[in-house]
Amino acid sequence: MLNIFSSDKELLAQLEQVLGFTPKRVAFYKLALMHRSRPEEATDSNERLEFLGDAFLGAIIAEYLFKKYPYEDEGYLTELRSKIVRRETMNNVALRMGLNKLVVYNTNDRSLSRSHIFGNALEALIGAVYLDRGLEVTRKFIINQLVRPYVDLDTMESTDTNFKNQLLSWAQKNNHTLSFDTLDEKIENTRKLFTVGITVNGEMIASGTGYNKKDAGQVAAKNALEKLGPIGER
Amino acid sequence: MLNIFSSDKELLAQLEQVLGFTPKRVAFYKLALMHRSRPEEATDSNERLEFLGDAFLGAIIAEYLFKKYPYEDEGYLTELRSKIVRRETMNNVALRMGLNKLVVYNTNDRSLSRSHIFGNALEALIGAVYLDRGLEVTRKFIINQLVRPYVDLDTMESTDTNFKNQLLSWAQKNNHTLSFDTLDEKIENTRKLFTVGITVNGEMIASGTGYNKKDAGQVAAKNALEKLGPIGER
Image (cartoon, rainbow over all chains, first blue to last red):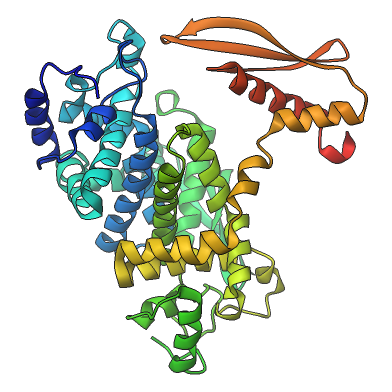
């Protein structure tokens, strides 16, 4: 590896702070912090490690949610996981961890610091931790250094997805009469399938289907919100 | 767990054959084999385990490819992985493993046996193996019992993606004059970006961009093939 960092000792100290443990094979971590816009002298970038880290991030978050929410169905778990692992969340976490001070990239290219390169470097760092220390340490790193300090699960659970609440508060604010009505119940592949319609001031504006009334109502509310346009215009 | 299987002993013998090891906590595996169209008496289904198993399948295949192909870039690894883990591949593997004889589902619903429920059950089984025996055993199960016997990586590497070859052989068969031309080279985010155009009998039919000429040519060929329509119509 090239000695791009001012000194290995300094890097090691910074890494320890970010990781919460002492890395063994520092070369993996140096590579994880190397954006492809790196200085000319460098020959490799963190993209392969990002591929590996992204995969283990997904698996470890899946396990974490699977165990934390024993009574939620797979749809709920899938949605919550995608909120945690998505680019915006990971980039935000990376910035709060201070990874922008560690990633080696072309600082002359101003568009880079506004892109997701820090979140991508965080995924690459997860790949480095996995190769260096295995699954257990990687899980601890993700849960203790990323999720617990920087990911607000309670807010994630409630935001965005509660389309029904969003719609109700819009109706209340604008003095609209809103109603949710079950339009249809049928058996599909041995399961009951419900269709719920949403009426605003007597006019049906959207409907949705689901395996229970709650889900069907959520889908209908989501469709209604899409039809009504962005919150600002409502 | 309910005793839906004729006997636990029989199930255990069948599981051992599929898994390549002796399961410890059989309840996990029973649940993994329980489709939601299960008999009335059953109360739970394999969907949560499928969520977990799918995540670890993705991670373990990522690690396998990362180590098997040390010189391929992340785009290559991502594409190869998606071919392995996609529904059709997994369902095919599950059928060849004989999981259709083990999955508990509503056999009166004929549409089910033509859907991907066996591939989904295989993912759930991976989740069960992970919960029962941890990462190492899960990795061995996936690589030794699924990938090595049933996934032809060499064929996967070459098929579908070689759009350029597909296009060339189409042109040859139909006596068309085909040429690939570099239309543009520019610097974007410190990297060179190439645009390649494809001309058939003197008429440009498609173009594509990429960070090298080879990739740009592939993208252009893919676009050209999409424009030309399915192979049968060409």
